Image (cartoon, rainbow, N blue to C red; front, side, top):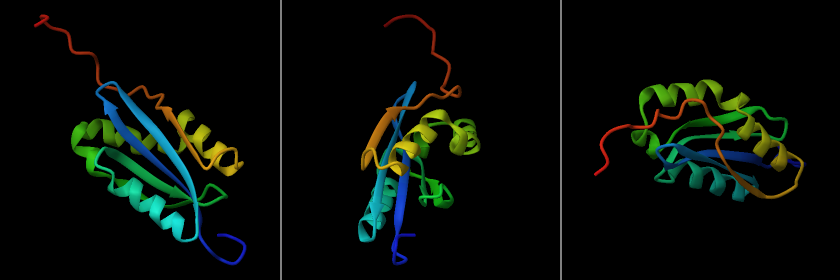
Length: 122
């Protein structure tokens, strides 16, 4: 919560970029802008998972996005399980909490990416 009880949120979204790479996008929003940040992350067509944290890193809300259909249920389960301890997510959250930038983005370091498909070249 902000000084007078307003929203001061850090919104994190894991975005599907390609089969073997997802991106962590983070944005800090205050007041009405916080709700816009959350809704943008929640409604993005490639969002696999999104979450909102306050400035004390307490989870406010989160869930799956439209991009869930782009990955397997196993990947979704692993992302949700590791979300709050993932080094990329915690790095982005730290940058937002310290006020280093209002937005940040990095490729997701994740051991659950699908194995490369091997087969004949077409």
